[in-house]
Image (cartoon, rainbow, N blue to C red):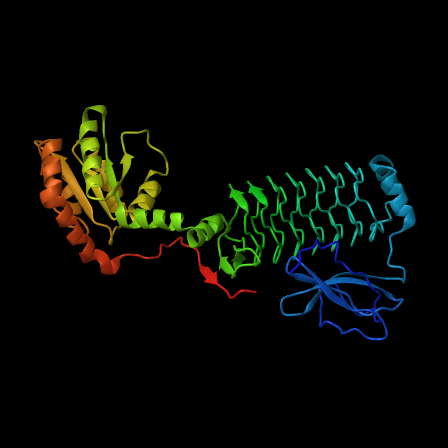
Length: 454
């Protein structure tokens, strides 16, 4: 399929009947003697569609995958063109335009339908409520412009500069915003169904309460972007750069397509992990890393003060010799608020856990963390250096089914010997014993759906 911009394949036509409402669905028409019907060109997985011709009005629409046509915008009155006076005023500059808007408060919806404003300087322009359906705003400068409540369905805003512009409650259905600079732009409550935001820069953009269902966000930059209460259902998100997103329980993010259009479709339900899932599916090196973590990782917990670093170093060395990958969590470092969550995440990835309770000051805290983890499938091996005595609460942990017996060692050499002769075999038996309870999927794991090639 040849890729074209939405604007390039857009078709405007007249309606034979004015009874079509915005957002309604029509079946595609075949070419007839009464006039053209379009359904000929495709772009970004959509087919631009046109209805029959007459002198009653216009319609812009696109066909969905089920071959229905979504009506994006319509108008009546024959010409289906912008008001020449409005266009001329706007092209004179934002200052004169804004003054005219102030002087004519009764003009709630300036008629800029299909206006060619490509490259126009519209900085700070008051375009609130304006009808810009199908307008060409390619490379226009819309910095801090007010487009609140405006209609931009099917408009071409590709590569527009709309820094801190206001599109709140705007109708941007099917619009092309590919490559646009939309940093700190406000789309609160806007309708962007089927919009094209490929390669758009959305740094700190506000899409709270916005509807982006079916939009294409491929290769977009989503840095600290706000999607709270938004609808991302069915978005194409292949290649997005997503960091620090703002999401909440009301954010709808199901059936997100993480593959490009020329590959079999894979969907997930969490945008934050989309890139990771795609890499895991398609990159052998990433799969090898995952396999290494889940089958070879050994989490080591304890307080490894400078005088006890030799024990830690020896423990690392011996585990590597047994083809294990040590992951160290040192409780001697400054505490963090989310320490329990961090340990829990590492513990869930580990084959087994070694916890050194030799420091009497550490025992209550480390063992408290371990007890809270409810590790019914990950073995725990407690160690203690002689002649220290274990903290009393250790007895409760030792009675857990996932805990081995306490291992006492004299020094790092003795610990190395016990690893060879006792510890490794003992803990591997425990791994097999707990295997039926091993969780293959975690509570936070996203749903991944494979679809057929389209």
